[in-house]
Length: 170
Image 1: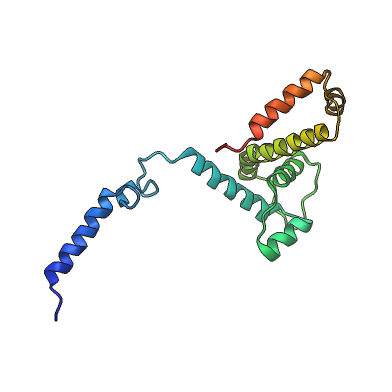
Image 2 (image 1 turned 45 degrees about the vertical axis):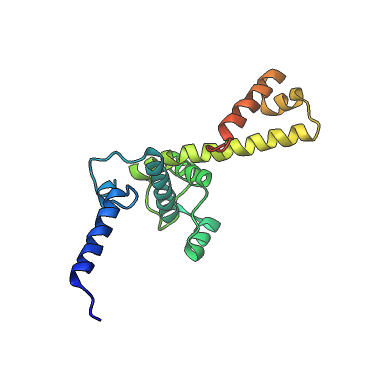
């Protein structure tokens, strides 16, 4: 039995109406296609951070970092990428023969990665403090190791790091 073209048009119209009523599928809600919709800052930062890491790795990775990038497309860790650009820009590291000079975009990329690297470093420090306490070290001993003057300063630092290093959705 032949299909009714009117039924097909009605079904198509119903699908379009349904997608326009659903904010998830309505093309009018696509912020990437609408230049007047403010992008989500978290999404924009995540994308910019990823692009920054790729840029620095592609242009400035050396040694094992270069091998991992060339063989497996594994980017550098954020801290390593920031350090590489800082060392090259300061002149404390020499560029490879075929490596381009550090430019403004490289510096911007490194600055973009600083919060990510700081977050990872904060998590590592908080973990070390937790392990030190777990192994019986006193706050006074921990303060000495951190170069702080008092046990109270060490406790306060631990509390600050624990708050900063906590997952965002916790």
